[in-house]
Length: 191
Image 1: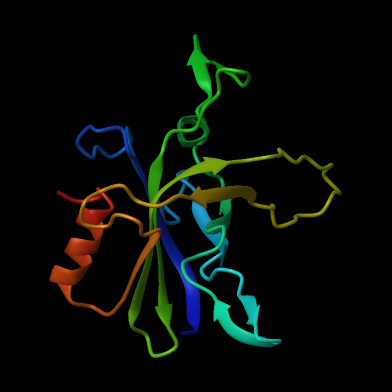
Image 2: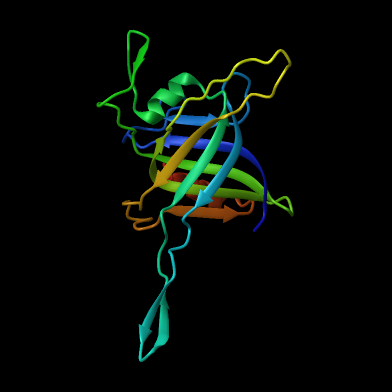
C-alpha cells in the first residue's frame, strides 16, 4: 500500500468525557491559524523476527505481534493550547509550566491519506501518548524561507477496550461510511 499525501490528523484525548471539539478533540487539517500536517513516519508494525534453533538448524522463526509502535509526526503551526494539552503541560495565569508534574494524557490518533488509486486511507492508533523532545529556533536570513514544522512522537500502547483489546492500530482503505464510522467510534472520535 503506497500512500500519497497526509491530509489530516485527528487527535482525541481519552479523558472519559464526550468528544468535544477544541477541548478533547482536535483536528489538524490545514485550516489557517489552526495548524497543518506535513509528514508522518509509522514504525514498529512488526515484531523483530527471531530465529529459534533446534537440532542444529534454524527450526522456526518467532515473529508474533508488533514491535515498538510509534508515529513520528511533523506538524506546522499547531495551536499552542493543543500542544500544551497533548504534552500534559500545566497552564496557570496564561503561563505554561513544564516540569516534574508534566504528564501527557492518553490519546487516540487518526491519520488520513489516500492510495495511488485515490481511495481514502485511514490509519488509527487506538491508544498512546504524545511527546516532544525539543523546540527549535533559528535566525532569520533576510530572505523568505519555508518554516520547519514541529516534531512530535506518538508512542502507542495496546488498547484495553473490549472490542479492540490487545490491538495497537486499526486501518481502513475505502469509502464505506459505515466502516469509517465504526473505526471512528472505536477511536472515541465519533459517538
